Amino acid sequence: MKSRGFTLVELVMVIMITGILAATITVFLKPAIDSYFDTRRRADLTDMADTALRRMGKDIRGAVPNSVRSVSGTCFQLVPTIAGGRYRMASDTVNDTPLPLPCTPSATCSAPLDVAQATTVFDVLSPMATVPAQNDWVVIGNQNPNDVYAGINRGKISAAPTVPRSSDGLHRIAIDSTQFPVGYDGGRFVVVPEAGKTVIYSCVGNTLYRKVTTTFALADDTACTGASDGAVVATDVANCTFVYDPNQGATQQSGFVWMRIELSRSGESAALAHGVHVDNVP
Image (cartoon, rainbow, N blue to C red; front, side, top):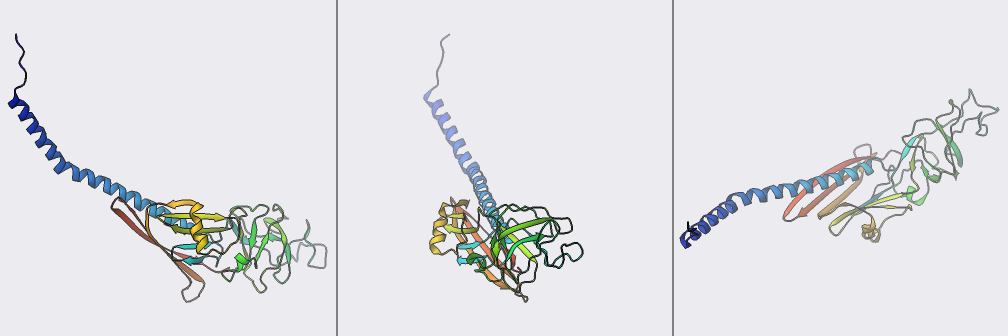
C-alpha cells in the first residue's frame, strides 16, 4: 500500500489553526501571567520594605535614650544597647560591714553608685537579658542627644561582671573611674556593646544600608554616604524619608521617628510608612 503525505492545503490549515490558538493564548493567558508576576513583584517589594521598617524600628526602640539623631532626610543614627537595668543607689544599712558606712565594696559590703562622685564599681539590682562583657560600656543619665557620643556619661567595663551577695544584687560591675552626670536620680543604666557603638541607617543610591561603627562618632553627610560599606537592608529604593522629632507630647519625654520607604522594580512599586515612639527618659 502506497503511503500518502500531507497536502499543501492541509499544511496551511494546520498553520492557520496553530496561529489562531497562539493568538488566543496570547490574548487571554498573557495578561493573567503578567498579572501574576506583577503581583509577585509587589509582594516581594512590600515584604522587603516591611522588613526594613521593622528592623529600623527594633533598633530605635532599643537605643540609648536621647541618642537617636537625624543627620539628614535620608540618614539617621543611634547608639544601640544590649542590656540595662537598675543599679544600687545606697548602701545596705542592715548587712554591710565593716562600719561605719559607706564601706569599701567587698564580699561583705555592697557597692552603691553615687553620681556625686567618680564610680569604679556598682551592684545591679535587676536581671539583665544579656550579661555585659569586659570592654562594653555603661551609660547613665543621657539627657542630651550628644552626651553619649562625647563620652560625658559613659564608663568602660574593666572586668567581667561578678556575682555579689544575694542581698546586694544580681551582678557587680567594675568600670574605669567615671564621673556620671551630677543630679541624675533615675537609678537606671544601659549597656552598649564594644563591637557596635553606633548604628547608621542611610539611603545611598537605590539601596538602604545599616552600618555599625566601632566608635562613638557623630555622623555627617560624608558618613552617611560612606555607609554603603554596611549591611544591605533593602534594594530597589526609589525614595526614603526619615524624620525625627525629639519632643513629642506634652511631657517632652517621648520622641517620635517617622519613616517612609518606597521600593520600585520593573514598573511596580510599593511604599510603606512606619512611626516609632522613642522613650527619651534616661
